[in-house]
Length: 139
Image (tube, rainbow, N blue to C red; front, top):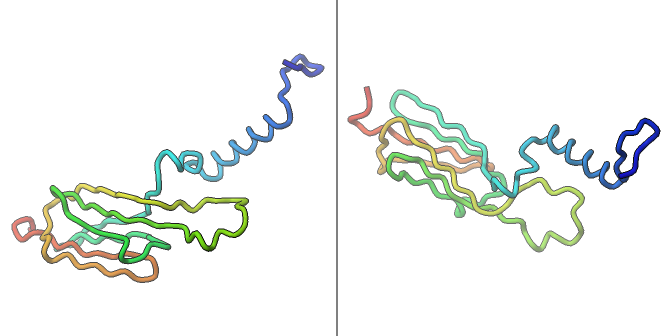
């Protein structure tokens, strides 16, 4: 290993640049280095009113037909996919931060909901769903 005049180990320039890039990733976008491991997980809010749970999910670039909401064993399950349009890829990337592919979000609900009366709307890349609480659960 090469050493400088103080006896410290020096690294080749390329290794230093790679370490600097890794450090920037960790400080600027802590989860950016793990994108491939964790997959795409859209941001969402789930809050409760007196008679329902309200889901709001940010799904930019997701077509309405490519997303589903289901209730399975008292869990809210949000599934969908987002794909990069292959016809738009005519150049080479310098930065690629937007994830694509399939996602699944599974959230345990604090109370049962009435599956038959779930209402959803999708507008400007935001999904908003109202999940009414089951009659026996409302207090």
